[in-house]
Image 1 (cartoon, one colour):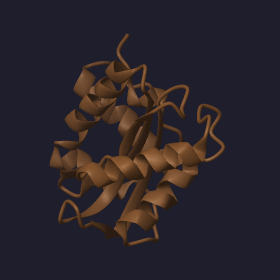
Image 2 (cartoon, rainbow, N blue to C red):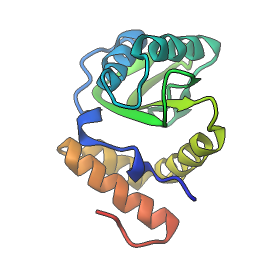
Image 3 (tube, rainbow, N blue to C red):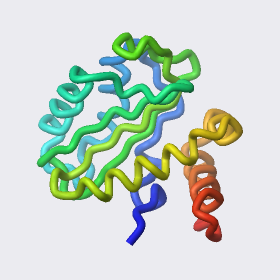
Image 4 (spheres, rainbow, N blue to C red):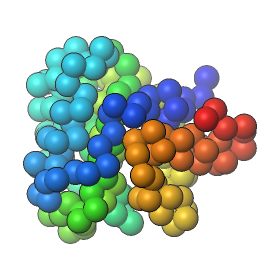
Length: 161
């Protein structure tokens, strides 16, 4: 079964106004959206794993996008939170200012599902018009609708929105 972003995307887990401009503070701000999520067994453990992964290497993908992530025992299923910053967040380890952060927690037992979602996300955001549409979504609900439409477009299927 193909994993879809629509399966993990939730308007309550999206902030379109990240206030922090420093990487660690912004990561905390976005990751905190996952605190209390039913599939997060231990938020503090997940957050520690996100920070540990960030220390290994940059999670910047280019074009103002970052994908902080962790394969961890602290989630039951793949979870994702999204943060958008108007002013940008400087990721010093990638020497890049990021405007969109997709924060993933993935069970260690499901590397294939995580790779499917990341691959799909990369197919969506590689197109400048798609990135612009996500940067211009007016509400978390509009952001979700935009992702669903773009997901359907790159998969060549009818939109779930």
